[in-house]
Image 1 (cartoon, rainbow, N blue to C red):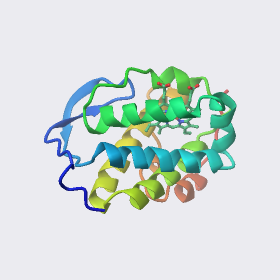
Image 2: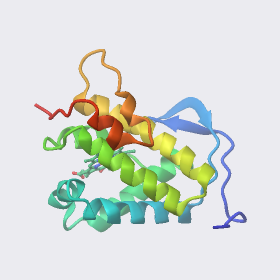
Image 3: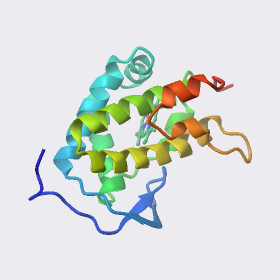
Length: 173
Ligand code: HEM
């Protein structure tokens, strides 16, 4: 894919935590809104078709799938383009997903990793995946972490599921 003419190079994109607030660290990610839209659309097609993740999403968002895609495009534009258009609170939303197991993060990241590489150029995909892994670590800690716990090393790819399966699978109690 080319798209270099409308590619938006953001020289100083701040880290965005799961709260959506900017942090001082910077990255340099060249991605367009069309690429973000393609990534989100394709990723959630795969999520909905996944045997574990699909029911988690469809049970909550069956009639609201289009709206979820809009929110996720806003979220990723805020993270990657510093657009500031996402104002949600992902942590409480995810903490409410009590049927999720931590292996679901491995499935989520595997799908995200594959989709990013299908949709984006290699360097852009690698940068976007690094952001997703960072945010996944925060969400994992919020959902599964004990006091003083660090995120598990398998949240750093690309062999999330294989590495996870060497460890322990836990459920939210
Ligand atoms: C096990 C992994 C995950 C599962 C099962 C999961 C599931 C879900 C579900 C079901 C929702 C809709 C909640 C609702 O509206 O009631 C949601 C929303 C969302 N997810 Fe995840 N998620 C996972 C990982 C992630 C990761 C790694 C990210 C970011 C990189 C992420 C970002 C978001 C955002 C931004 C929302 C929108 C929250 C809002 O409505 O403002 N999720 N997720």
